[in-house]
Length: 218
Image (cartoon, rainbow, N blue to C red; front, top):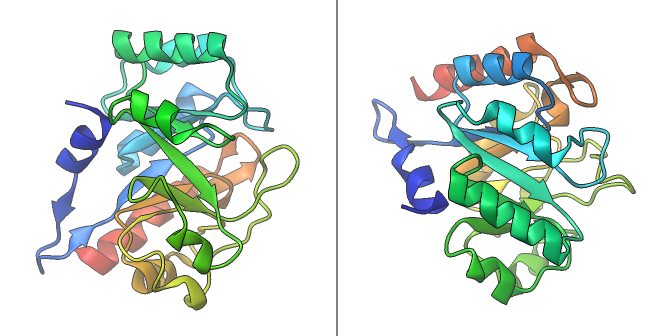
């Protein structure tokens, strides 16, 4: 099974029959934060290989290979050598998927046969309609020079465009409830919203995310 098949296998329903959103904790840089995230209930861990304050070396991903959740490498401006390395990590089962953030073509993403998807930065809801990579896209808010979040989240004007999809961008314990209500997402992707500083997670915030979800979905 490919990444998306395994991702859907992790989906579960609440006692009321609602689909409970999957959670990806991104920007993992150390095993302590990975341990806390998995224990709290994360479905996916994200490891940033692109230039970022949360960047780790591709060789460091191997230390997370034994974690029993899905693992995604986040890349940008990928070259042939990197693509080859990513394919090898997938073959070995060290990672389960690749999240592309650069100018990668649809053909390249599709060549990963369900093991890769594209992150799309949206300035306006209308841009989602032109997304060639849909429906397997992660919608995010624009980021800074080092791919770092401005802490911006989607507002209600995006509610029609982003229903039931993968969403990121400024999700925090403070706005999680409203984000879930507005977008009914299949997956939420959180990095800066559960950090003390870039690449260093706040364990109480991670636990709070899952406590909020348990209160909402049961």
